[in-house]
Length: 457
Image 1 (cartoon, rainbow, N blue to C red):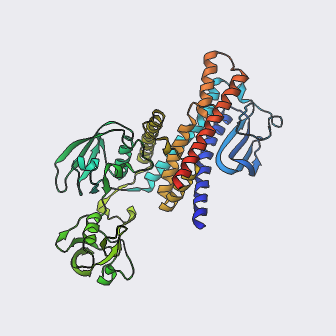
Image 2: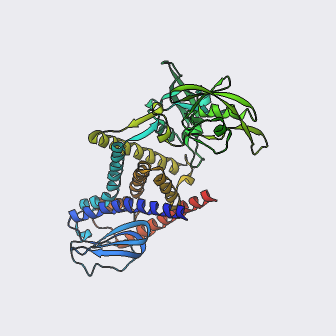
Image 3: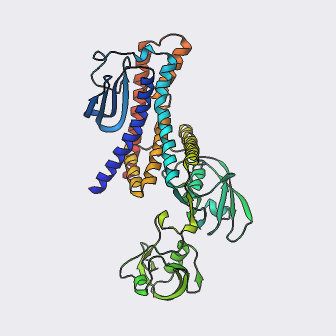
């Protein structure tokens, strides 16, 4: 129950901030042009809280935190669905402003979302973000990574001539190739060598039908995880042997191990056997005698077991394997702008590929997926939560710019049509456009929720 409450609180906070900033953009632009704002509402349905300011604007919160709107005098919007307050408040009408002013007011919402993303990334780089250096931990059999000649310990330098500084860069660059057909260029170095290797692998409609799969994992690359003990189970072979948290296992018998995957493979092959472990403990090398236990997997095969766990977060990773990015205000702001731009391009590319069918439309997520992601991000820490907020804010800004009536992009199209025509559009045409737009948006929302439910079952 507490898990559900935590997810709901995280989701509500996320939506309130993202939607609130979006509507604040519209509101401030309207006030700049002296347009009377009748209502500023976050959420839909029954009003939980409301208050009026000195200029007669109603600020309210609805029971369903799934959107919001700013209603201006002279503006009619099919999603508002409440009593018209236009007769109660007098002021400059939205329709009395110039087409340019209307375009600025309309586009101010999405612009505010991009601004929020920049601020989020600015805060992240000010706080400091940790990433793992792009070392290969293991390579999946028959994968693209194996075709490229990658192996454990290799350091990836670039993908498609784009520098890779950390695993986040690696995943982001590979994400941009989802749905593509062509060649992927990989530049990497072998351990203890400065010699660079350049290899290409061919992809055909890569991951076009996959859902929620890590591009790095799909490429066949497992992240580097050192054979460091993060925790020890009670009454396990490891505890009885005297192993402690923080020990780094260097070899099992005469077999050297340099990654967690190699350690697991070696221990798994030695059920109910005895061995000496060579470990590094507080910069000292020692040997520990251990009686390896056993467990039976789902196929009925007996495998060795020590009862130890690997590191599960960047905070547990030794510093030599971490890339820490922490900047001053100016550099953090510049990086924030760059990060927002990069993810905007990536999302636009993904939307384009969904429209053309290069990527499965099942990747579209709705409120259930957003709630799950926001809850997981909040648990992972402040930086993760802010990062998700930035990504969702960019998504909201871009989605609202789609040329669908009732969305900001559709409003801009109607404003442009009026400018080209040289006179006002007919009420019948606008009403028809709104109905079509509402139908499209409701269909998109239904499809997103359907995808969410499909993921759960």
